[in-house]
Image (cartoon, rainbow, N blue to C red):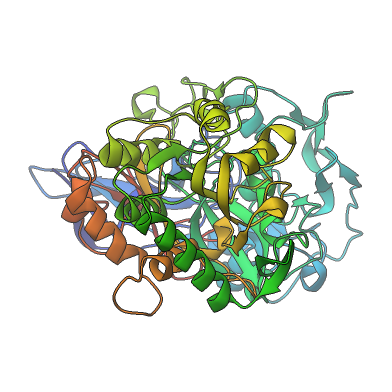
Length: 583
């Protein structure tokens, strides 16, 4: 194990852990300010904000010898005997000088800047800057320009950390951004006729520590400090990226990537980033409906559920044939309750895997393995980022549950063909994806496949318009639960929004239909614990400690979410006072 000294106090690093001075200090709650460094990008040490005093302790004599000048913490490895000083008058004076330099040409527009509240320059100017501005000459004014249809670049706010340039070179490999000219005339710009339009382009906005790169989709719409932060999972494809959903006044305003070294690292694709809009769509089902006199009539929640429960129970009692389509957009808890309910009605009931869109092929970005996270290839832990063609979050988890309840998975297309020749007495169909699935004549033909049709969805689809009962359910943002991604990792998403008026989360709908004891809202944690005891492959859930996993867990893996992890704190993109855990 390595012993290091930070500001006169000895700390011990775990065996085999390789960190630079910034990471080592963060691990023990000591902040070294920085701008250009990022743990997933190469080290350039051009902002100089992280310069500290460094030395070494002789293991034999105990004598400490310091390097005569300050060095960048991002380039300094923390190894046995390393001595780090971050709070000396010399270091503080240097930080104040760097802040003064960075603010020479920076406009005083924090009140109107969209980055205010999560800006590294703003935070560090209060912590390490000075109140007197000695620069009296005319400031350099750089142009505001669009680097893509979605991203605006305010060069007068840029501090030339080059995170965005390195991202397009090392992570996406698309190389759209470059530094043009030198000195105080330097600018970030795109190559001619090559806008920043790669599928991960929005990450440069998250990477920017100041207000230089801004997402026009969010621009001037909401203040960061007004938004509540909710840990969630992107449900746009089967990658299962960890995201933070920002909510205020019952509306999602944006999704941002949340670090998970096992799934999405620090990134999220633009397709997932802007998928939040479906949760705010004005066309979502506004109520539940019951067919009366040949037409659908809006009905109170309790009445719609009572009609569905009574009819389904009566059909089961009479020995009728029942089937349920289990959507891959449901959480594992919802799929488990649905299957339990339908099989409880009739042991012979069929459970069908719902339709899921597949668009094109998987797209994988492989980071430049020559650019290590600390500038040394021996430290490389970057992983490929894949945008999956399978546009649903939980096919993997739903299939495991279907196999438990009936031994096999019935594909939706095969079911639709068979149902055309052998109609069912009752059919329950669930949806809930980002886009309406049950549209078109092929889907509406399912109306003829059932004498009694219940559609549980968030969209007023063509098929829903033909149902006997429509149960208005929750969007991805209105419910809590777990999904199993393409890699077999079980991940938890919290609810970011309350249920819409006239709707209920799917767990509550199913608990009421099956008359589950308790009578109140259903906890996804309680259902998950029950599922873990019943369904093979989910046993690892019962071995987790603390809050159910922030980072996900392979279903057959017994590790706990905090085992063997080092602390990495992002000083401005993480919610204030919070830390994230990193391998």
